[in-house]
Image 1: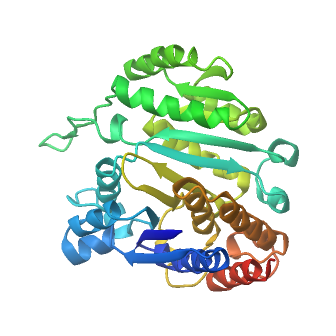
Image 2: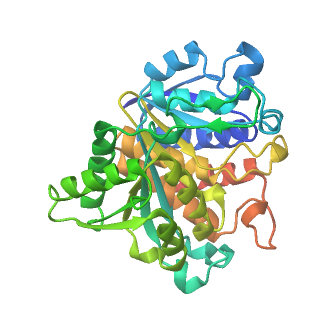
Length: 357
């Protein structure tokens, strides 16, 4: 198969984890006989510095012309610490999602047996956890108009807007995932307070009737935040709006013990995008200490969802699990043992893949 992939390393540790992910991608393509073509684009703070645009037109065109997009990370302290900046890296991310039609964010959450002790939660709570977040990605308060600040700087406002079409398509995506898993969907909202959530609840009840073989339950977002920590093994597929999903998926990282282990896929109307959920971690940039596993697992998702190559994706997962069991890991999860460099972890995984029959 021919694989035409856009590569957007981004900011901070993005280029470092991307380098290791590309090594793994190349190893998999060589083993299975795929033809790989990659082309790099810029996005985020580095794109602002170079072109005064966090998501340049040429980067968007590259994404449209590719079969899939691998994205590293985005953000820089000089923008985080200055609320008056008119152009921000995150604007590029939001535009990319909107213009590529990336409406559905898929974030698997699972525990790794060799890292149970790294989670701040009790072993009996996290052992065997395996659920998926389906987060709506192009609507809600992040995109609602109007938004802004008063001229005197004392008032700010954002608007949360959702349409029936946006809610229906993400709910259908969640039910399709559930049918392939354990056939349970949990709809997360705040329907007791927020009008958009009441629309979510209404439409969810309508769509649930179209999937009679899938169990549906409903949780208010504050209760969901508690239940994810108290009884995570009871969940299969959770579906929610943009901001709630942003918060809850990061909270769920405590189950694995590190943000550096969680990949994600952004499914949309054009080219799908695959990225780790961790940030740009600028303090660690250039030090060869960043955990590349989430980026590498995002490559596994790419093979599985963009190209329907399940065997290739599974081999990457097996390699990551082998590295964890062998304690070939970076300092964030080394647990007092030897900490390996970003490049060493990537090279070990490539070697493991190459020696498999």
